[in-house]
Length: 184
Image 1 (tube, helix red, strand yellow):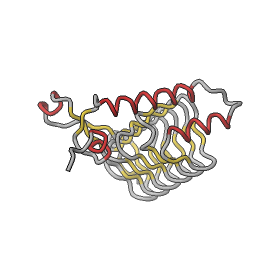
Image 2: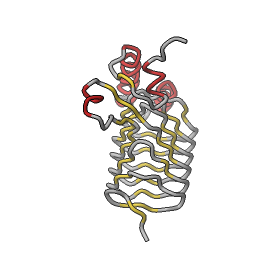
Image 3: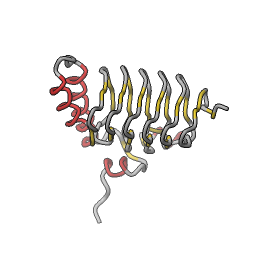
Image 4: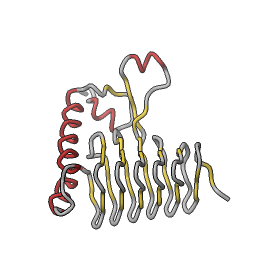
């Protein structure tokens, strides 16, 4: 059996080398598409939609992403129907990011699947890893919130502005703060 590629390791959430040539090419591809999108005019919605369809793994109907927008690869991102991402969102998609139908995501929100080993020698060796992020349907994320690797946010949940989400959020629950905790 041949060795697994660094890309396959990355997608599986295993330790991988981000400086791998295949992954570098994938990031260059994504950077080119982001540049086209981020420099595009709002009066060219068809061109914008075409660019996003090339960038993302899936792009739902009626989704709106306000530029500038930033990601690592793009192909690990699935956007549901009628999703809204405000300005300056960052989606580090070394693993899968799923955004459910009807999600509303404020400006400066970060969805970060990328992670680093806790062992210092493993970090010095240049290895990284990631864990997927899943947002259910109708999730509202306030401005500047950060969702850390491996988090699942249930349907109808609310993440308060500026919150740092370090644990899964149950459906219908509102969380705020750093670390984010449920409101009463």
